Length: 520
Image 1: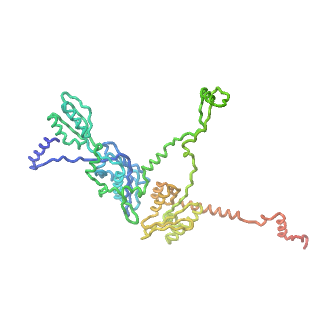
Image 2: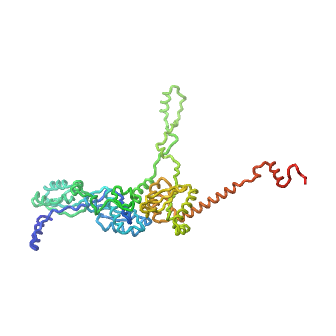
Image 3: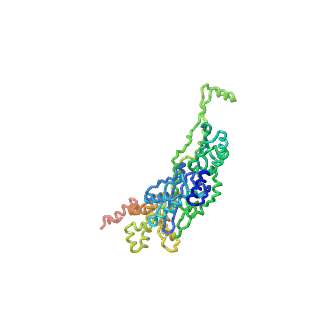
């Protein structure tokens, strides 16, 4: 709006409402986006609350706005929780981390998440979702966007050069000018912040014969990002309404983890990194073919030259000769096949889950829980003797006030009692994360959620009934081996005697004493 229009509007307002109005220059509304894909993690776990969300943030096309998708299996996160997360993404204007401006032109995809059967509430996923977006923005390379004008100037040919120079100074671009009779038309685009007030300057140097019309084109990358960010002075860590960190729980209390340390505490794997690793594994490895010899064919002239330089020339062979040179070893000897190293086997057992899944132990636990624990420990000791693996039996002790946890050796197995505010599930997950990559780990539990989690960490799962069948088969096999060995260990006297001694003993057994044959 030009100055004449502003003066007319001020006059109309005064005539109608008797109010003096002044118009300012206004401020440019900036926006933000990202340049590279990144995975944001949000975790919200104060006491008796739980939610974790993983979001894939990808740059979108200019003008596309925010787009929300889900690429998460319902085996990992139920559909109702996925819909709730998408609702939370759509309901809020998410702020960037450069200037606190709204983010735009991004694809946000839900790739993973986790809920707790007892402790998760709807508000937990709201917090985890918001924190996942902010954590992803902090990790990514953010870009500041500003609005651009599409302009069209009508001016005399002698003023076109001045106008083109002014547009270049203002970080704008333009098309070649087009002549239309006595005037020239110049079209292009430039940042809104640079074009404010240019109408007055154009009118001044054209003597009122130049005109310019502008309309909003959209948002493009800001050419002067750093000075604008410094001028605004936004601190994302000081914005308490839009936190970048996550909340985790330990020892019965929640604690805040900064955005750059969240991945060290998160409970689910980073799907973006795991996908990149899997893609690397899928790529074919180009290897050089190792040849046993290399062939060089020499011509007759080359052979003649060699014979001439030889002190005692041999009889010349006028036919081409194949000279074989010793081949050099291939450069990729590191790709030679190696035998796979045998990994140590571990079996982690959720104690109380097994007790209340086996009928005989469940009945025993009704009268004496300690007896049920001891019975399970004895059964697993026998099973470990058959399997020859490292067996860890874990019992919940999270309700024991002041409990620091304990680990004891019971015959040939390890028995773990968790510390206060730590469940057996949490201990097993932590152990699987630590040893799952370098060892064969199997977890015995009937908790469906726990089975999904340990599968994500590379461990094998075994149900409570499956473990019972394994134990029964192992005990049956041990019994067969023991009975078979006892049968084979029987000793008979006649097996170790010579034929003569056996004949004499047989006579004694029949009553025929040696030297008294025929006597009565």
